[in-house]
Image: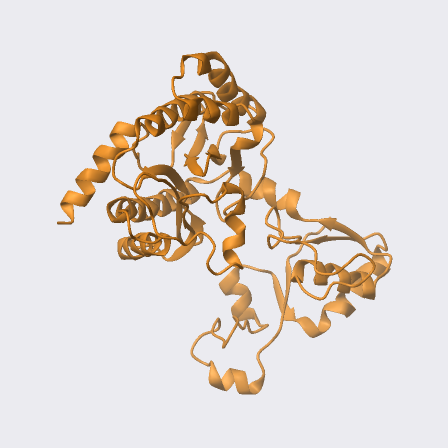
Length: 378
């Protein structure tokens, strides 16, 4: 079977060609590609043609094979956060992933439509050496932002101020994009993170002494994403109860990291963490730590997904293999106090290695680094 790649593009009008004549990719609100041989060579695609001929091209293909399969991008795991744009029985009015499928069905009602996501997952799941290098670069930028946030956290500042310090530092370090800046504090559930995108004031409040502040940060390098998380003390020091939770949570988390290897399932890693909690919870002293252990026994409090060009590529991953990059960690709250920990790991032949530069895990080490970073800014 002969295989060819075809890209159908909206060609720029004569006015647009005059306006954006300096580059083949420039446009006012999109990249305009000229359907010609020069662009084919530039992108390494065999055929780049005007999209006016798309319907005729499909008709020709269907005459040769009526059962031709349409693999459509259905937005992977993100689904644009919400994947419903109208009540049942009505055609979608937004979300291009839904509208594209609806347009194909309207034109060819008997079309065989399949989700391209599983194919894209297989392509993206195993990272090349070049991709790993880009992810490590993104992790370096993320680390710079994270350390700036650690230095900036004090009672009386707002979440957005801390996030702003992180963003400024990451871009000074060389980041070229933002993937996930977030600091949570006070009585805000960890389950509301996506609300921030449409609730203007959500997760923005003045930090109070004695609170915990779960920080989840990610910055990009050439579209590849960084991601790291720790729980920080607003006052610079954890309370004794918080310290017990942080260290117990971390011990359970580290057991999961040690369980990472080629062929392990995501469930096996999470169950390893849960077994640690079950086997050691009776040694806890504070009521806060005991309630935290009850949360850590729940599989849903452990988050795991593969990571790369998209913040979330495969969720949840069924089985991990060499070359996979996986974000993993616990995320829960007790009595309005949030607790969170996360790294991105590369699965290797002999286990795993961290993508991101090392940040402290233990409560005492977190406090020590925060003090050093604050002192260095004076």
